[in-house]
Length: 215
Image (cartoon, rainbow, N blue to C red; front, side, top):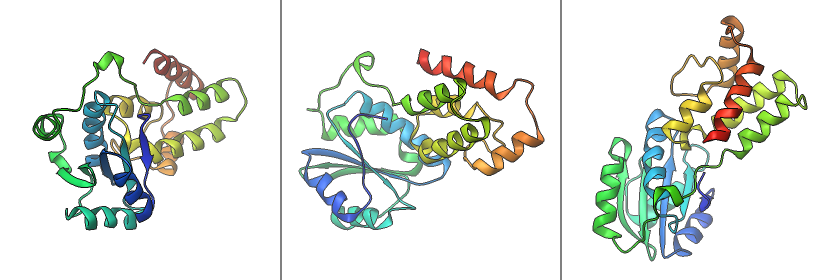
């Protein structure tokens, strides 16, 4: 994930985040495929504007924080939703399938043309270190295969909706996920048991570790 990313879990944290930064983005994350796709566009556009911090509200778990943003901005809640603030005042919003790179770029050009852009090659990629460390522990024999599988899938379930399309597809490729867009650890493990893959999990994990290192 981006370096300047902040989880917002309470109304007080939402207020402090918006008021504490001259320019701030708030992204409301749901659990559906729209969130994953929308976040991919947000991450891509803000990757070139690393000076803008992003506050993430997981709406299902932290609805009071989401309600506070809606109250102070006057913008009706949607999920997913991206709202840009300047000096505590909402500049614009995009919701659901309208969250695209093209729409974001147009609104940035209109409202935030003075925000400097950083060339993509100089910007920071999402943080994949937790996955690398977990894979290393498993490949080194520090944790068992069941421990690894359960930990990996729950980690992925927690942040899958905030991954870019590229990262989602890569991380999702490790197991035989019967659902293309959602992460249900127990269902995935049951599917894996009932439909064993030709390549052992250990070999798939080693190949994935190499791919993550190459990103």
